[in-house]
Image (tube, rainbow over all chains, first blue to last red; front, side, top):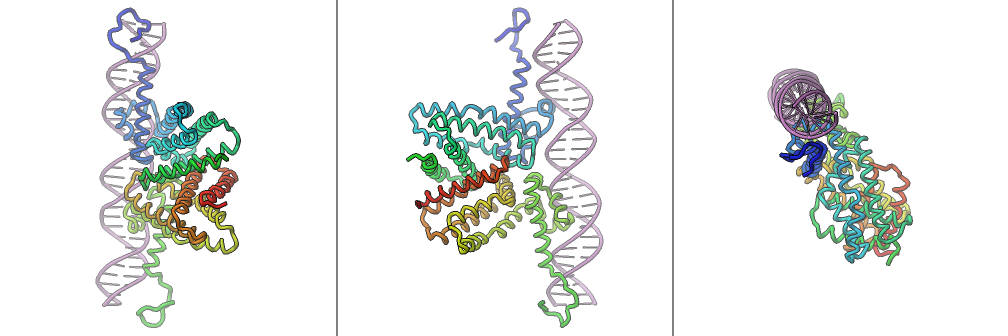
Length: 208
Length: 208
DNA sequence: GCATAAACCGTCAGCTCTGATTGTTTTTGG
DNA sequence: CCAAAAACAATCAGAGCTGACGGTTTATGC
């Protein structure tokens, strides 16, 4: 679609390097996340990822020289994906007339119960015994945490310590709840607990 | 101390098979847990465990023919260790004059923040993508859950649904909080949150 | 005691995973 | 159009892990 430099007629659509690079890397990183979700951290081998991405060994190693590079890049990939999205989405929902705290809690639970979060958990547990990974993932966690805090502040207009802690506790509760889903897949039960949490959160915020 | 069958004098203390077996297996299982804590699930190889236990390859494979057998046995080991202990311990502490709910929450946090719980988490996450392991670990979780529920019921005399759910929520909160320790090792911060939870729990129980 | 079985030992073959290497195609800059 | 660089391809050697195997020691039942 875009002629750069050369004469008049561009016969076929050449894909620029930068774009090819981006596409291939994305394919590989998506495959990594997918594998983390389905096979877990130990099952996510370089071969497994390569096959999922339909990528040759050479191409893969060209972009990510080692398995560690791949996994670390995967967490950065997650960071980009889940980055600012939260603040925007929550504002949108409130604008549609949702009750702020209910909406907040519901959105968080959607996030924690999303299959994508399994990948985060796999990486998190692996990060415990892997300093490099831990450093990257901490960035992710902190970033997401801040985004959530801001989203919340923007919606109830409270920046005090108690409000912050209330959100923090909410996140911990959600994480613990999310992990229970390893054993039990009873969505309605979880939904019930999440609803109870709304009341809890209101109390934590000193509301009634 | 006990002569079985043979004549009168038992010259030297022969170690009976059953005892040897128990000792060796325990050594191997302890080494497995230890390795899970230090090296994580993927790092817990059969060689690693064998070395930690100071055990030959043959002996190891005699008792646990495969790595999966070892890991599954390790969760059963955990189950035995952490079995009934909770009910007893909590009663003891209350008897010493501890305020029931505070004591309960403190004890739970001690449990979740114990290094041993890292092993549980490693197994839990691995169990998500491993059906055999999941089945065994579910047994562990359920058993522990029941033990905690009973301990709690015995101490406040409530068996209603709300009380049960309050405890359940407490466990989820603790689990999520425990995982945060992968990134931050700020014990006093966690202690503060745990203390706040005590208030939460009282509210959940309809106390004031 | 003695045969049997269980616990224990050390080595090895087979497999898988990783990352290195060499070669080919495609894009870019001049 | 051409040289250089980047993307892609395929094969391969090395390392680590698993589980099998044959052999040794120690306890047990008769």
